[in-house]
Image 1 (cartoon, rainbow, N blue to C red):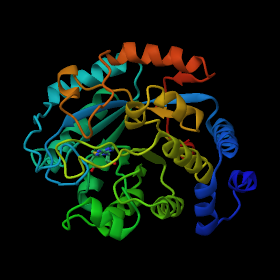
Image 2: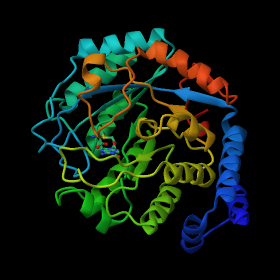
Image 3: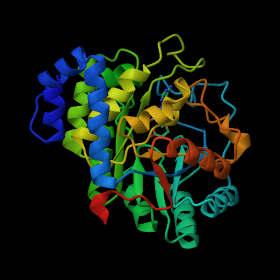
Length: 347
Ligand code: SAH
C-alpha cells in the first residue's frame, strides 16, 4: 500500500485500477503515511504556508436547479438577497485592511448580474486594489463572457466539475445542465488564461468509489491550478434532503491524493469540511491543503447563503477570524501569509 503512495509522490504513472484498489483497501497506517507524504509534497512546493482568500457571497439568486444545492431556483424557502456594488466594495475594503489579497466573488447564476455588471464590478475592484487577485465563481457562461471578465481584470475562476462521469452528473442535475458543457467551460477558462479551479463533492448522492477515481483522473488530465473539494452535506429544502453526508475521512483521503497527483495545486480546506467536523480545517491542512477561505460577506447575509445545512458560520469578523486561525495553525507549524497566493507556474 505504501508503495502506491511513493509512486504518486515520485510522479510515476498509475492507472485507474490501482487507484481504485488503493482507495478501497486503505488502512489507518497507510492513511497516516499518505497524509504525511502529501504535506511533504506541499511543503516542497509552497513551504509551510497557508494562503487565505476572502469569500464574498454576493448573491443567492440562482437560475440553476442542482438537486444538492440549497440556493437552487426551486427552493421557495430561500431568503434571497443581492449585494450592491457599494456593499461589495465595503467587504473588499474591510478585507484589504485585514490583509486579504484575494477576493473571491461567489454567487448563484443570477441573471440580474449581467455580463456588463460583472465587468463593472471586476474593473472597479481591480482599479481600487491593483495588487489583489480577483476570483470569480459564478457558474457557466459563454467563452465571450469569460473573456470579457478576464479582460476586465479577473484572475481566477472556480467552477467545480462536480463529477466527471456523465451518468452520475445526470443524477445530480436536471437535464438542462450537462457535464459536457461544464467541461467545455473549464477548458475555455484555461484557454483564456485564468487560474482555474475544478473539483467535486465527496459522498454526493449515488457516488461510487469509481466515480471519485474518474474525478481524480479528470483532474489529472485538466490539471487545474486549484481544486475545491469538500463533503456533500444535505439541505432540507432540496430533493436530496434525506441523503447521507460525505465522510470526513474520505474527504481527507481525496485531498491528500489530489495534492500528490497535482503537486502544485492550490487546495483549500473548505468550509464544508469544517462544517462536518469541528477540526475540519486543521485536518484538511494536515492532509495537504494550503488555502483557507474565510467569509468576508456581511454578517447578515452569511446565513442566507446556505448551500447546505449546518454551515459553520463564524460570528467573528474576518479579521478576528483570521487571528484565531493564525493561532490555531501555528500549533501545527503553519503560517498564514499576506500574499495573493498565485499558482507557482504564475511566478
Ligand atoms: N453557482 C456557482 C458557485 C456556487 S456553489 C457554481 O455553480 O459554480 C459552490 C459549490 O458548492 C458547488 O460547486 C458545489 O460543489 C458546492 N455545494 C453545493 N451544494 C452543496 C451541498 N449540499 N453540500 C456540499 N457542497 C455543496
